[in-house]
Image (tube, rainbow, N blue to C red; front, side, top):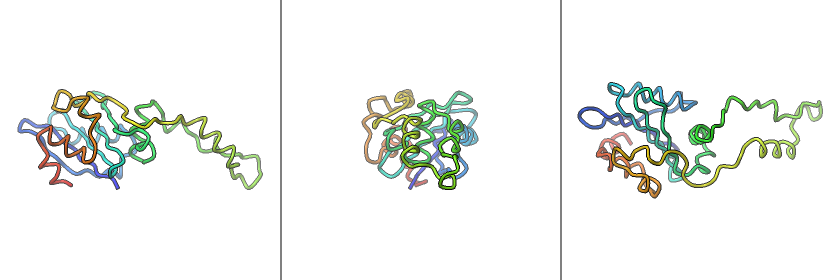
Length: 175
């Protein structure tokens, strides 16, 4: 189960809102969603977690490219939203993968792929993702969460991030 929240910086502090990721398929979609929540192109921080497996932080500052951090890339790569983030960080383009290329369409078995060939092709085309953090661990440094602190967060990491930003009550209200 996923939890996602948007934290939008304002003149008076932070505004938090729970967010639905149903229509988010790419990092661009997520950045657009965050920009819609922004107050005058100010910073928006998107926090995503999948239970205790991994968490992600996406920072959007105006029209700048999103900055992304994932706590455990291997765990995140096995989930839909996590793989969206890890693919972006690793420079993978999901649109480049053509499912038909993985099929053995020689007429045998009604076009069913040979499991041995399919697993070999998939292993060659999809590099392994190492366990551990991936991305820009300095993305929150100027607003209260240093690189070392971000890399060592465990358990309820999103609450600790929100606490450092001074908006833990807001985050808990949207949970």
